[in-house]
Amino acid sequence: MQEGEKQPHTFAFIIHPIDPKKDVSRKWPWLGRLLTPEQVDFFSLFFPPVYISEITGIRSASTGRELRGWFVACPFTPQRMMTLPEERVYRKIIATGRLAERLGARILGLGAYTSVVGDAGITIARALDVPVTTGDAYTIAMAVEAVRRAAEIMGIALGQAHAAVVGATGAIGQVCAELLAGDVARLTLVSRRPDALAALRERCAAAGSAELITSTDPVSIYDADLVLTVTSAITAVIEPEHLKPGAVVCDVARPRDVSRRVGEQRDDVLVIEGGMVEVPGDVDFHFDFGFPPRMAYACMAETMALALEGRYEDYSLGKQISRARVEEISAIAARHGFRLGLFRSFERGPVTPETIARVQERAASERRRWSPRHSS
Image (tube, rainbow, N blue to C red; front, side, top):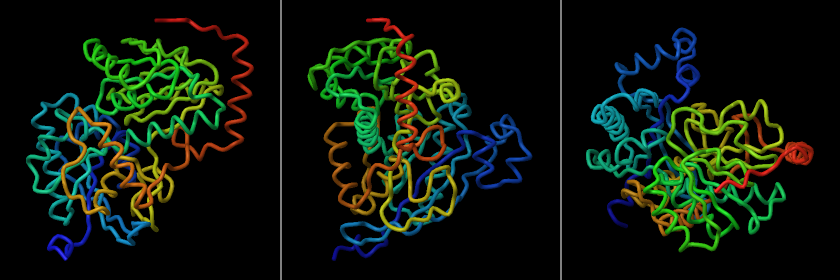
């Protein structure tokens, strides 16, 4: 047995407050009641990295190997990360990573906005002694699988469908678009970066036969049957008026891209949270981060799967994730027992067959008043 095999298999994952008041309340209910969101955002400048909880019970379905992990928190909100100098944000994330090192983690996962700041993990990995991953490769795999499965349960023929990827030129969006280009008849690529859209269009043309449309305006998704959205915006980008009746929207972004107004006003569309994964074993996170028991984000699951595999190396870093890396982590995760979890919408309970039937019924009614825009 090699020296590395004698060490326990461990990981850590960085989280941070997305909804300041609500997320602070998960750890300190009294503080969440006391402070306003604006105060949480302000005081995050002065908070040190925070130990959140130990994670136990993860067990590989193929090897029986057990895994121990920790949640550690970078106190910055997305708004704070967007407004502070990049170097200051790096320093806080690196300090959080060093807390993970002291706990004994052998690999570190970057959650939510900590994975997209600056060069998407490269600078952070260079500053730490443990390897780092953003979890983007497995997030891509689970997002596309979720879109495919949602199309099936909604009765949308994938080969005839019009799909759209919002945030298409980002690290996750690029490969999602490439994969969907081989699935659907028409694919709309939406990004604020026209130059990057041109390059992505060529990449998607080589990957599949879908008719390709590029746009810088989210209104161009109006005719889409399937929408995968994964921007790094800190406010909602998809509103009720952007969607056709019967559309499926897979929201992979954190903070969420889909406005809560969609859930309130559009009972004729299906919005699902992307990237919810069932973890093998009797996992206990010892912390409520908003998911049902045994469920984790795909980015968390990538970190766990790499640790179970003994792949203690930098993995999904930077703005370019290869399709080969997505396929590799998919195989690793499946071998250890990770799989796509239940669908849910707007952090509510699971999407049931009754929910699907209601959406389909409402969509059939609303389509009588709907007309396509035929945008290009």
